[in-house]
Length: 213
Image (tube, rainbow, N blue to C red; front, side):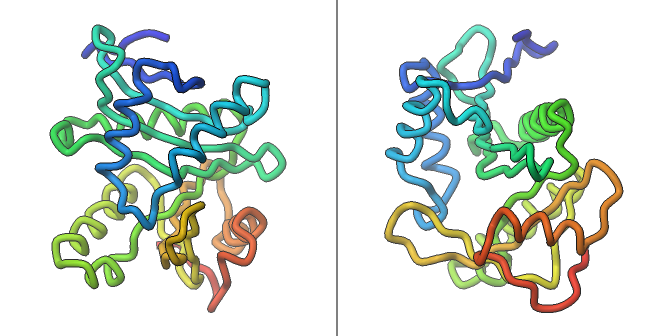
């Protein structure tokens, strides 16, 4: 683990006793609405499994200044399926006060590099649908649009022609979301959908011929 030229470190958290865990939670709670969040109990179970050598394909990332290991500049949580050669990004965020510095893009690049090193062919993740976010506010809709365009600039595309509902481990009702895909090698939209369907199961349904936009 080494710091970049700005003194920023990206590393994994594998225990709740890590100095960055409390900061990770704060950024997480501030970045995602309740209906899109897994519970703290979910992450504590993740740590418990890590401690006994399980959950080896799930990873919690944190970005911190090298000189302040407890100050969280960004977070990520993802998993890898070796069988599908696919990564699944569940959460990626930076605190509002630190946005616009390129930290999120650096964290995403780190994630992509890790997945490539594990021979993944594809990364899948969920994003809010602007039209659905508009039911909350115009500001939420605009933020959802900007997030999609941000991921597009980094190489991802929206998987169109499908319907997907996100579920969490709390009482919240399933939330309709877009699925985005970042291909690391040539792959058709149909192939992307097939991999997504194998992982997400009945949460994703094809409504017309899949396309990537």
